[in-house]
Length: 406
Ligand code: NDP
Ligand code: MG
Image (cartoon, rainbow, N blue to C red):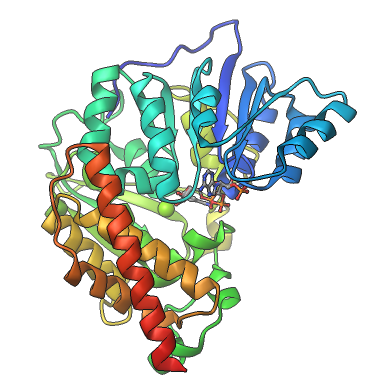
């Protein structure tokens, strides 16, 4: 996965672009970077429609460029920046996301969902150091993305806590795409989310707020629902498959409710190496920003005596059908993971808007996967077309569920 090494110890500040700055990962990244003002300059910040929030961030961090990629009142946003005497140049529209990447040394890719694919891919194609939080890019376009990154000499560093952990547990100083013949398995830990032990019948009635109340992590609403269905872990299995170039049969999921061990690598001699820490995204973010060195993240230090116990269990596929669907999409290959991802995004959004129940998320995705045949996923166009078709099919299915419930 590593293609070259970032410059370290340079006197000049590294210019950081944050795609999705107003989100959970975006704000954590700003928190870490602000602790090291001599090392990082905020080059650009982007948001979709959260204009006020983005402007607030511009006033604090003074980036060169800010981008609002969604439809917003452009004039009002510009006036506000001017009134505040902020020199940040504001650009609007999704095409402007590439301007946010230009001129940056390091790009934090933290837009949520399929919308993150195109800008993350262009950062990789521009040969940047890409801090990869947007897992959907690799789920939808794994082989294409990794191929383009390699060609352009981009450095990819995983931000997803599990993948960052695996990266840290792989042989030091070796690229993750190097020979993994000494690695037997990659073990991804999963908290099991808020409904791990809830009675199955009660799952039908859970609300979006309950689904978003993750026991250990504070995250955006989409990934929080994904954690509750365990689709998040399914997406992470696909992400690991491409990021580390390891066959799906060597990627396993283990439930670990405390979220202290962030993932593990098992070697052929029986050694298992784990990465531990308090559940705080600033740890993987600081790791990737400072790589190959280390720097303070602001996270509290782990008190093992206080944690006292770590528990593990095998995942229950009857409770979490989405995990099985993700493995099936990975096995089917081609555009199947993009179809899975698109159907999931539509189903999660419908659940968050109370249009379907929590237990209908999996069946909607399964329906779409059964309806749409996977094709080749060699170009971005093919992948985006599959995404488009799967979304339309999922929306129909959501309507069908609503009619049935009425
Ligand atoms: P949030 O929902 O908190 O933030 C999403 C960010 O993306 C916001 O800045 C949002 O802007 C922007 N955005 C949303 N839709 C679009 C769009 N269509 N076009 C452009 N920008 C858009 O998400 P998270 O920070 O939780 O997650 C970001 C990514 O990181 C996801 O892919 C997630 O899977 C991954 N991740 C997150 C973790 C976490 O702890 N949160 C952990 C591991 C991975 P606006 O505010 O205007 O809507
Ligand atoms: Mg994760």
